[in-house]
Image (cartoon, rainbow, N blue to C red; front, side, top):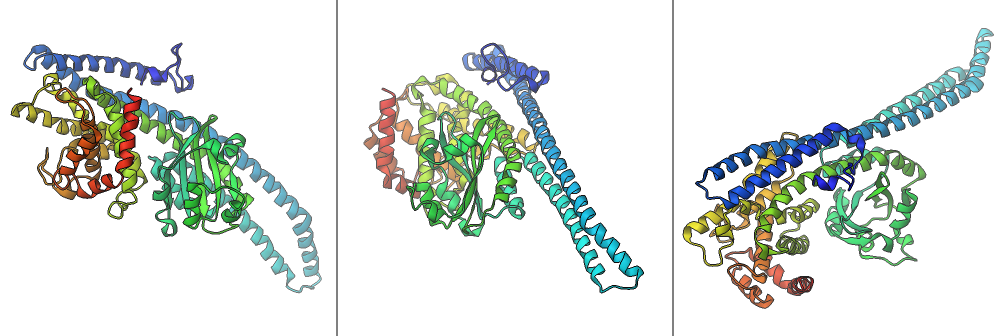
Length: 540
């Protein structure tokens, strides 16, 4: 991670404005990580009763806290940097607002000078002559109304600044989106807000990632979630090119002369009739798009576009901050999971394959009547993130056990079982440190690491959980993990054929695996067979 933050000449990719503290923190993190890796190697290679083993184990414990503090210091520096950028954008916005207010004040003064002052002089003359018909009071009411409108203008400006501040301070991506949904209603009409994010590693690829709505579109987010599309195959490319929002006030008419793609059909079928699409960009980098949609035609006006253009930078910066910090923390722990995998060369790309199996299975389950209420947009994102961490605890298992070609003894198997507890403990420690900052990131990872070897009938480990006591994510990963293990070479076995692996899995229905998940797996067996064939081709 330290090397990825620097260019070939050693300079920071994210800019020198981060300051020396950030650079110092990165250097300290790198130094501590090198020492941590050295200690790990000693623990893995030396006998457990040796002095060097005990010393290395103590060193790992000492460095663990230091690494967490290093990551937290880096996170704080990044947040401070993004806050400074937010202050810059806020300052520009305030200057624009002040300029508008000055212009408004001059205009009101000129209006008052050329209309109300002559009227007041005329009314005063009439009063002196004792001639009045009550119009003076009516005009004074008119002046009061102008004052009230100016006060309302200031009030709305203060509200907008408060909204932008709240967006910047929100602790997570989902909270930012919910905050926008609840607070923007006074300024722009909508019944659904969606987010499509640029997919990492795939140029021009967008994935429907988040959505929030009221009762009118309660299932829309789940239907769109995970849909992927290339930007150049849609009309979104022109929005990115010009950097301005797009307004469609009649969806049905809009698609009369255009091909309706799958995501557009879902929107129409769920009653979406108009929308505004806003590009999310920071420093010319595209993060994706945010969609404000309504179930009413012709509801959007140019003033709504202007409002979104004004607050667009604050939305984009907030999302970028949350994405960057989450990815930094997640990558740090994922590196440890990959370290555990790397000890067994035969596992190859096991983490990637089983993640793909788990993700595909979850996408199928989100439309299943018994699971769709449990699988929301965040669940799908988390299963992709945390399924590769299922065996993170194996970093603490001795090579003589982990790589043993024959059957494990009872004592060896009990030691192997402990990787579930060790893995959960690692993630729980990270979670405790994050909770100190009101952040929660590893909840599903903890559940998966701890419970992916539990069995439906209660015969699993480490806690002998039964049925629905086992977290849903762990039940999904259990199947994905066993499927890939059966299809892969291990020190103690050759790879099974896909058909033989499925036969073995079928015998575990209702004993090892959730029977509903097994039934769904076999209902879509051809899709998993195709995924396995693709793996075989990619592996040569």
